[in-house]
Image 1 (cartoon, helix red, strand yellow):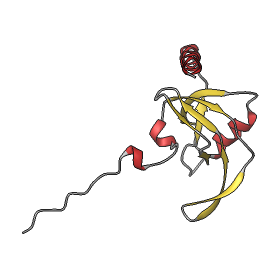
Image 2 (image 1 turned 60 degrees about the vertical axis):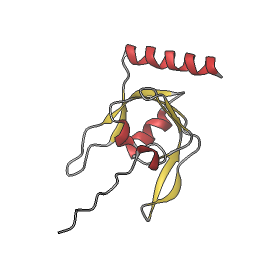
Image 3 (image 1 turned 45 degrees about the vertical axis):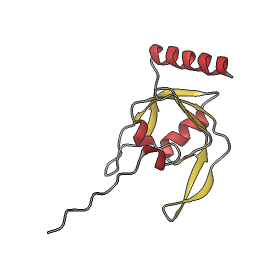
Image 4 (image 1 turned 30 degrees about the vertical axis):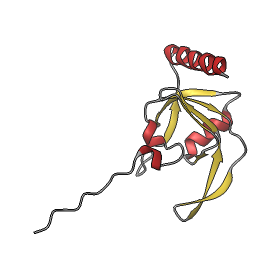
Length: 125
């Protein structure tokens, strides 16, 4: 009997862009939306998404214009008067549906962390 094949796992760098599941519970600063909803193709389907500049303060990574698909999260982006700060999490689930991705209100410590991040990144530029 031959040895079982060893499969490689995809690395984080193999997945381009921002993915909510990879940042669950992380502090995010969203600057945008960059523009209004646009229909794009994802997984072979036409879906409505919006590009926005997203900063994961927890990871210290900035994402330039990834497509944001979750409906509740998109509505939060358009309801903001400026940069939006919050922890990525889940809102209440509707009957028969999974809980939607959303930004949860930041704490005072979250706001201080975002201010510190912005001060460090603006000083570096």
